[in-house]
Length: 316
Ligand code: SF4
Image (cartoon, rainbow, N blue to C red; front, top):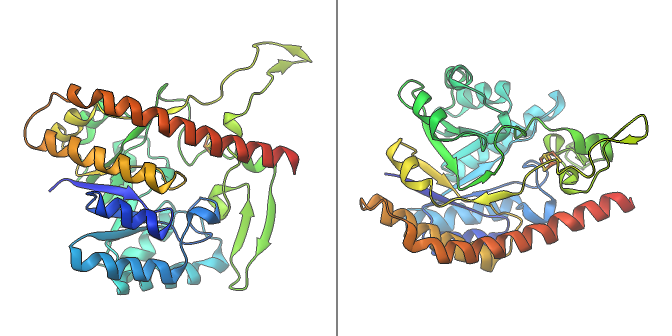
């Protein structure tokens, strides 16, 4: 079975994604999933969501993909064991040591290698498989050529994001720390968890500074105008038939920071498009108009959120 997974930035968003046809939904616990707290869930919400979804034969997966420091490891493991006990389908992790620990403690839990692990090649995938991961999220930078190369030899399930940076290869998810050089603040909560706001890997969220306009200069001489550091990511459509042909097992829709209505519409759209391809029809051109309309709404909401984060960081 090929699974479609939607985003759950809030409890209501997760429910909407599942109701609009997703088989699975991913959520993040507050302070542990590289997003602002507004797009993460409390523990009780994660528990209630799992219990709500299970009778419907849908599952909930938890992105717990920050890099815990040594003092945070017990709290990290406690959380993962709790999610497994509640019936979560899997967890997304990026730290190799944590993947090994979770596999030892939770032998039946799916472990996704988070896209933020920054996988580069088949050897990396084998490394994570040996640690105990059984699903790898394909880097946004990859195209079908890379998938052809690895699909038969890595022995793990493949999960593809339904979005992609247009100019592939420049930014590797999870390997950018520029935001934390720009502005960082630190807070430690009552449970001893660090929140470094400005560092996605360490329990805060990035300020999206790659989306700001920068001057590039050498010795005070402007050398290139205002370069775009990162191309705007695009929702995918045309790649879907190839991904299915190449054995992608799971499709992941991003958008924990978008509105519930937009996420619901995107999930419904991809449910219909994926069912169309799975039924054996690789011509997705009939979905193009709706895809274009959704892309416009997606870009509008993304710019609004990203711009607000940059402005907030610059003013701080
Ligand atoms: S600054 Fe841009 S590239 Fe770097 S982590 Fe943030 S969103 Fe990603």
